[in-house]
Image (cartoon, rainbow, N blue to C red; front, top):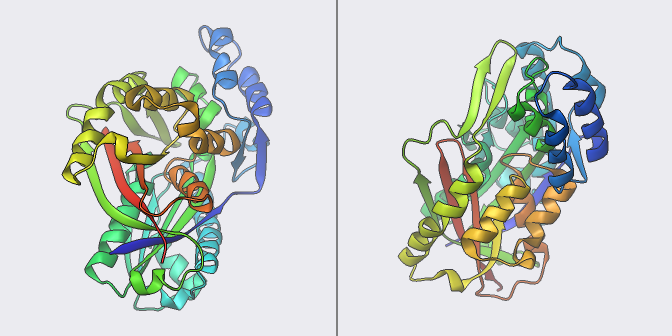
Length: 357
């Protein structure tokens, strides 16, 4: 058995309202994007009130940001935010950094060698013998995949304590000279943040005075011939987002059978899922999930609230939703389905269960 013990989150200092972001986009794309007036409704319809960035809004008004500048910002921000989220997760579970045996670091918005997990080990004061697994390239799906890898490690080593850290700086991938619709969409939804999840075996779970969640199983699904749907293009000034318009339609059409098959492997049906912890990639993504799983607004309340307060932070976002669910009263035995979609085009799923000792 392995258990989710705690979740910690962290946000950068620069808070930007959706109205401020819309005004910036209106001025920046003015006269350079066809049908801009109609497309500006994306900001109103995104169901986002505010977001947090690692740089002030004025940073985006300059065209002179090299890939090196962006990546240096990424490294500094990822280390600081990852450390803050990890400390919060450790404190909530009342464990020390030196208790951690294994760290999984997930990110897709920058590059670092040595990877950020090595820097976190030193900065947090973890043991020099801590095993580490950096994962790059899973995009929004990275938070769920990282949780599964950490939980599987604890299953293999029941006395171990694993720490997942997911950090993204999506905002600084903004490309000044890209006046496409996809760059406008990114400007309307992308944000920065970090989340950390602590996972341990039963002896660690029994020490917790708060609710924990049992990890049941995980599932990965790669949709064929879908490499064009989501990802990054590498350009001279960094990473340029790839968004295919078909994403919501694919979710509505394809996710239900994937999830039903996964649950059937556990002897369960969709009706057995009490709570959904889904990555709120955008308003249309949430609508597509509601259509696929026939969910009411309340079923996606936690995801909607995270989207409204923080926007799309890529991999950490679903862990912000998980944090909200863990802070609520969840009757023991109830199943929680965690899911996110990422480049590939792929789905990562994890099934959790409310637990009390």
